[in-house]
Image (tube, rainbow, N blue to C red; front, top):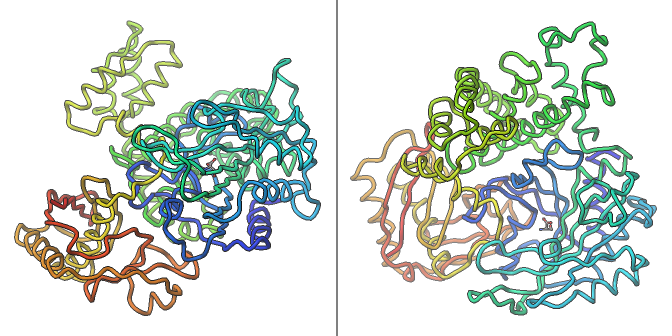
Length: 606
Ligand code: SER
């Protein structure tokens, strides 16, 4: 079965259970300061999990592009990727555990659908602790569904609980489904929680029935949601009886491209076994270089999707741009190790675009941008990579890379810290991260520790203050259009309880006068105490009315449109204030460039 067939089957199955199909959202979350990337299908749905009404209804299904850098060290094994697709279905205060688990099993095992043998599955449920009891209900449902008790494992929170990663928010026990591969057990206690590779998690059913409050107490939530996520690549591999995800029909051609790019002559290997042996599965060469080959495949696939996203990001030293830089540069380093010469990552991206472009048309649309950015980033890095590696050798002679040295590698040679740390690990030398962080802070860049926090995931905040800042963002966009012109387009938005951040297209620095005019306009609209109205409209109608929004025509049939008098009309998930008068005083605290032709404004409500 191909990935395309699996996506189609999944959507069709859940449509048959009255789910509305919604489109894959951007990889770059909007208005969610807790994560840098969409790490699971639930991220774009956060407002609805918190109680907002979704225009498409209470039962949703989709496939979602996701990035998880938490697993980056495991990339190279048989089952982990940083970019992956997640098939998901949701109940927003609608069906509950019996339907959810029953449908998962039906889809996996029924002859009409995936036809996986029930004997090849094991499941896990939450064991219970002082915060919440054992999930007896799921346990009993699995038994009723014919899963033998010895294959129902009970695990604690670290394995069987989802969210909130932040301080507060909806969360609950989950129940995971594992495929038992033909790999031999690693010992007498081999089970789903061990990482030997015999058990592969393919699907997670999360039951969000709790709310963690400010005191850390897990309260029963007002709204009960189901959030399920199934790994597309893993399932395709299993259905095709493949040994790993890199052998999937939509990934293997990328592996082949990496092998084509390798220069065997240069490695002095030509003629030893015959070129065609190299890189072939099961060959000595493939086994030896598997990790490097797979890292390149995974990282450039992820980089292609980040660059090609609707909210495309450029490599930089902060936030998503930093992750992107890390992925590209790590791939380049492994490329050199494999003997690949010259600028090469764009060639791999071209294969990714060819394979994935039909399902994700944004890749086709942004092909030039993807290729240009990869070439630029690689050329930049190639200038310093060799010298940096030599410098690293010298620095590590005393078996220690100090924070200062790591910082020199970062600032002069462009080595992301994680790359230096990896080199240090390979060579068995120590590295002083704390000192590096201090150096980094001294240079007034974003601390990596801070950035890593954002990977952990979590549910966005829907407090009164963030609602106000959402509304202020709409006013700001309208004011910018009035003062600067209609060319102003939103490129990104991010809201925390303290401030809003808004990125938009504009070719030059704004003057002090323009900034003042924008502030005055927004404050005038606040004083007028205009009502904020929310309507659910067919997408086409919303477009006809001139509603602005970042959503593409993939967003779904019915969309939410927030209008503020005749000041603003935007497609947006919300939530918002009810009247502008609630907002207080609007003040811009910073205006700066973030890339060519894109400006960023940070503003507060006081
Ligand atoms: N949020 C859950 C996960 O990512 C289920 O979708 O595993």
